Amino acid sequence: MSPSKRLFVFDFDWTLIDADSDYFVFEHLNAELSKIQLDSIGKVQWTDLQQRLLGELFDRGVSREDIERTLTSIPFAPERIEALKLMKEQGSDLYILSDANTVYIETVLKAYNIDNLFTGILTNPAQFDSRGRLNVTRYHGLDKEPHRCPLPCEPNLCKGLEFQKLIDSYNWTQVIYMGDASNDFCPSTHLSRERGDLVLARRGLSLEQRIRERPDLVKAEIVYWQDAQDVLEATKDIFFGGRDRVSSLTSTAFSSTTSLSTMVESSSSSILASSPIDEIKAVSATSQQVLSAVESSDSKMFAQAVKA
Image (cartoon, rainbow, N blue to C red):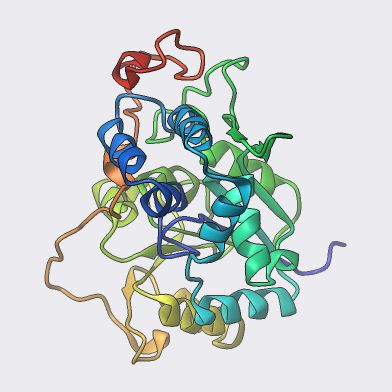
């Protein structure tokens, strides 16, 4: 019989860190390319856009050391680190499932000495070449059949598909998914109420909006959080609050000043906002054709790389 164990799976940008790592790098290293990045959103598949812009960044003299130094300056809230350590101490497996890339995520985790907390990272592969140029490729490459997920997943990564593989890999006692964005909705639909699974959804961002639009698709109980202290309190309640207590948290909104177990969702309607780059960077799931910016013969016009 398998020992009792929980599975925690996290998005990275605006979930573990309070930033979009792709945007953070260009915002801090080259204002012109940062503007091109924003202007190209929705016109070029996001991962392909990063590959093209990273080449431009290298051509303008930005080194590997510059990128790594910038990444280590991304703040990582100590309360989140405490929560992650608590999860690990309690015997849980921790995974990151993200549309960022391996270099960005691993560099940030190592900067805070928490890379050893994670069992695995599922994201777009990236590596520096011998010259110091960073290359990033799609997790779900163009050499594969499209995943054809009907939910708001990017063409390079269906989070729900990869999440289900993790769920099926072990007889978990409980599965918890934590995210903020539209592409976190798909994995949220793979959770089980019977197992006592939880969605930890960031308050006021697009995952919450997706859940409210299609609540019938999310079977797990939902806990909304606002900041790192909320995440820590939620983690403590998962392990020490008792199963009945945690099970009473369906659709709970909470603040860092009040115990998670005593909160009820506000009856007043809230204005739902996207994380600063989430919605405009999402490629429509109904797009009929997504062309690779890397393979495009036109190196100047990003807008020609995608036919939406």
